[in-house]
Image (tube, rainbow, N blue to C red; front, side, top):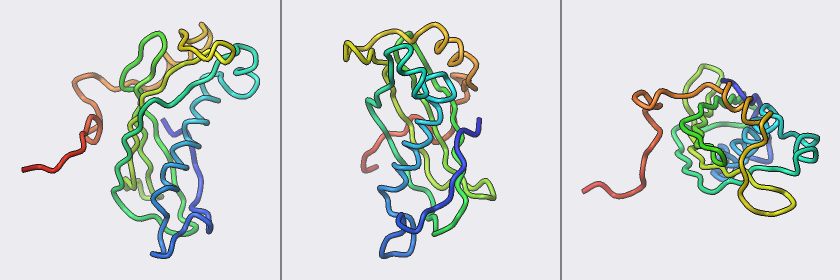
Length: 151
């Protein structure tokens, strides 16, 4: 599901003439905010439910360079979930659908007042259930990677 469309801002470009590595993380952060809005945790929803989402872990893979002004789109797929957590996979693509980067994230639902993990509010959980979910046998090929030097 397409969750975000944006363009590479001039201030995101580094001395190499392409998007700085930290800015890829920014785009995925913006996509997470868009996902939160989509599931009912926009500013009003966070206030109504006294609830938010924290990122516990991120695995970002850089695949191709992005350049100033280039259109970017981010697709999101739900890999797994439980009452308090979401395991999501996001893919940043260029205008031709080529993968520029991926971000696999573990997210935790948190009570804003308690500062503790809490189950998703019912209306949020219902929207989460409608997200595109990967079949456990057919995860995206770039999901579930681990970092290390192959020997």
